[in-house]
Length: 104
Image (cartoon, rainbow, N blue to C red; front, top):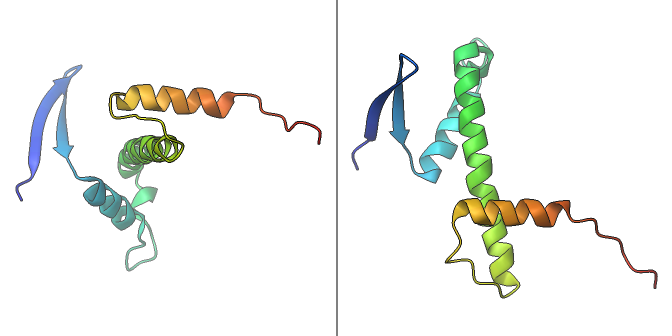
């Protein structure tokens, strides 16, 4: 399988855009978090830390949307016609709903 990659220039700064599968992104994150032979971790490097923050945020979003879709499907709600952004917003609104147990 070939690597999907492109380059872009944003505000005069060249950027590399990689397309990774979820498994590849999770593997990259795990690898970057592992300590090296001297006991240091790649995350201690400020440039790597910025990449890890972007990668972690993207993974959290993807995994969160998948989790919300799964829970909604388990409850009988169809989500195939909803975009990831719509599912994420619905999940956010549900999680912010003030719930109190009724006195029994």
